[in-house]
Image 1 (cartoon, rainbow, N blue to C red):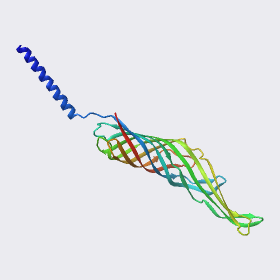
Image 2 (image 1 turned 45 degrees about the vertical axis):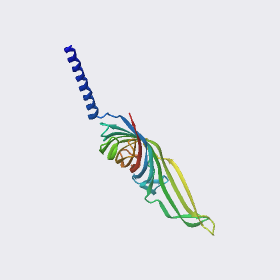
Image 3 (image 1 turned 120 degrees about the vertical axis):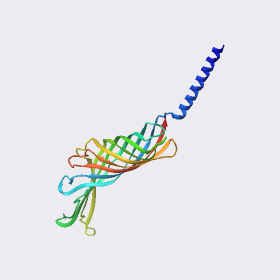
Image 4 (image 1 turned 90 degrees about the vertical axis):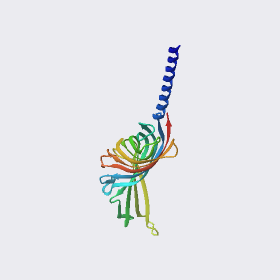
Length: 266
């Protein structure tokens, strides 16, 4: 009888110890939460073209030329962010982005006009002028795979961070728009000068189908709730490959935008 009583007491003590250990474990070691963040992202590019001087008109190789250029263009798409490490101290992330990226811009005319171009009408010579301009419709589907580090840990992304990684662009459009404005005699004595403007669009010659770049950015995560996070982003897109080797044409950009992500927890 005594032995049975001692055995029962020993089993009770063992069960109590196991319960206490389990309780301590659940308090000291938080449950690891898995999941990912997904949502839209978009903004603007401050596009910069870097080129050699090249002719705007193929018929006038030296008279009308362009070199370099700049403009503002939009970008936007979908972003997915996957947290790494302790779910209650999130600082490391893998970021995937699929983005429509416009790097359309105006080229800078070096000698884009001829202000004193003589024209003849019925054997009479008149002063005239020719002005040219060139811009490009240039866009890519970007596939970005980046690493992001937040300086502040938390159960949701919060605070300042940095993001860097490669970017692969698949060409969507690469067209050149040439505009020529001619001012010449109309043959009308009352208003002897007339102006005509013509714009022609053609595919950019020898434009590469793939663009490789490196993107680096500063980010700042602002959690509205534990699930909804807004992330302003400012960065630089550094081109590795050229748009066109004939003109030594590279397209880079300072970009700014914002992402809105929802934290889907597993």
